[in-house]
Length: 264
Image (cartoon, rainbow, N blue to C red; front, side, top):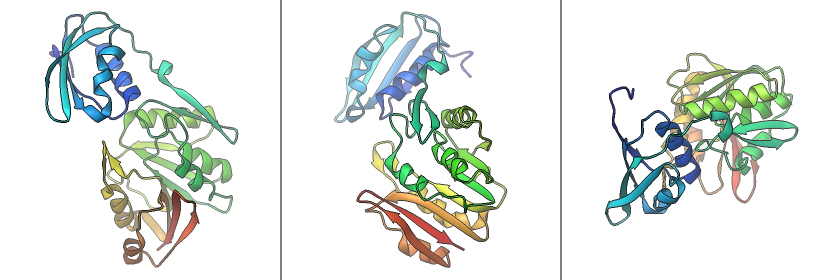
């Protein structure tokens, strides 16, 4: 991809650790004196880029708008990117969870995911699809509670798939891991679909992903199949679930999160 490239243009994400992780990966492939432009929203922490990258690049401001800034510089020192150095390890109920910057649940295991995992039991059987698998926490938790289930994990983030594979391997668990944008690369039907779907895109709220998971799930569920997902307490999907499922309920709830359970 970068064979004939001599300039890098990078859009700073909302998380500083993700930015450093990605930029270390990117600049490790480029030669010294390669020019780099970094642009980002002020609220994302992009102004910290010169300090974070000072060992490798000297950055200076080119321009700024009302809410954004553009900075640039040249690579001055080479770096070697070692993926394993960026993994963070969490432990939950004897499970080892491996995470990388930018993958949901990197800094800590999400409380919503823990709530959903607390509903898992050995009564769950058959084939299970984990949508947006991230670090692999939900799948590992499900296999811990119901070891005879057959897991398929999907995510459209390659680093998330790396995390899920590492999490499963660390716990000596098995599961099929697929790169898929929600259901785009899924061609089977399942007894259960689980998910902790995001409701933000970049820095803005966006519930389109959750709604698509609900609407399309019936195509990928067996007869009497179940959809079980966690969401923030203030979000309401009752009407959408009523349109697409025979019955549904809030299986578990806290002040911050609730777990929906729906059956075809």
